[in-house]
Amino acid sequence: MYSSDPDVLDVDSVAPGLRAALAKHGSLAAAVGSMRASAPAGSAVAGLAGGMGTLTRALEEDLAARGVKVDTGVTVEAVERDGDGWVVSAAGRTLSADALVMATDGPAAVNLLAAAVPELAAARPGPGPGVALVTLVVDQPDLDAHPRGTGVLVAEDVEAVDAKALTHATAKWQWLADSTGPGTHVLRLSYGRALSAAAAAGQAPASPVDRGDADLFAQALADASVLLQVPLGVDDVVGWDVVRWVGALPSAAVGHRDRVAAVRTAVDAVSGLEVVGAWLAGTGLAAVTADTRTRIAGLTEQLEES
Ligand SMILES: Cc1cc2nc3c(=O)[nH]c(=O)nc-3n(C[C@H](O)[C@H](O)[C@H](O)COP(=O)(O)OP(=O)(O)OC[C@H]3O[C@@H](n4cnc5c(N)ncnc54)[C@H](O)[C@@H]3O)c2cc1C
Image (cartoon, rainbow, N blue to C red; front, top):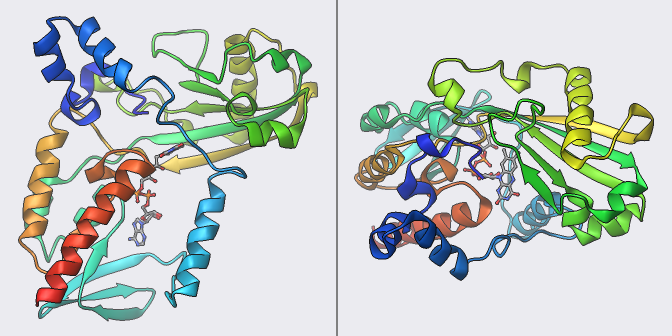
């Protein structure tokens, strides 16, 4: 989930309760065992038939039905205080509002709120790493046996493989397997580690985002062959694609919890403002939506009182 070396992660951010369990059980293995017993691997994994993109479309329809207008592809350039309200500037237009919910990545939120909440500057998170995902659709009946289950995570010091993870998507999601039929498989390889020990030592490898599509495709084919122990060649490939994400994985490095607490304190002191997103709530839709609901409830209460 964090694609980071455990040495550089903030334990309290990524595994809340682990330190208390360690104190209680007296060993790391027993502490992890007790936590795993109450939440077995995979128990928190769920998807949507048709893929996560269906969620975006459903949200769009719901917003439209409620009369909400969404401007996509517009970059907000500035945010200013206007009395008790806010003025947002984007694409040559200004919009006024009683309340502002900032739902960008961390660095963008800190930049945009620099004038209104200068205290945030001290809590500015670093930009997240670049991530490249290579999806391969292959005709290879040997994969019907799901040789690695739903996928593998690759340790950083593995030399024969460059990918950090492989998801055997047709083994993981039944709706996808139903759509391809037997013999055809969807594999997803991901490149780009968040907090690598090499990067911490100043020996960061080139970002995968800067690698060309053909290069990443050849790498993915080679990595998938090694990881699955099934030779895969160009002739087996029915289709492929590369998607790049820049700064999409927020930091969870040591000290992150303190940073989040400092941001919350600074934002709470400003009326009509909420700041939400994975950089504060933790990675993943479940964490972000649960936290956002709580925050918005607080903001709504505040507006109703004023
Ligand atoms: C490859 C990958 C796979 C993942 N898989 C899963 C998964 O299977 N399940 C899961 O739960 N989570 C997954 N995650 C994590 C999940 O995507 C994030 O935790 C979640 O999207 C974070 O939501 P957010 O609202 O904080 O940020 P984002 O979803 O990143 O949204 C922030 C938005 O702010 C916009 N923005 C930034 N600056 C401006 C500006 N100035 N003006 C206007 N807009 C701006 C950005 O364009 C972006 O759309 C995955 C992440 C990645 C990168």
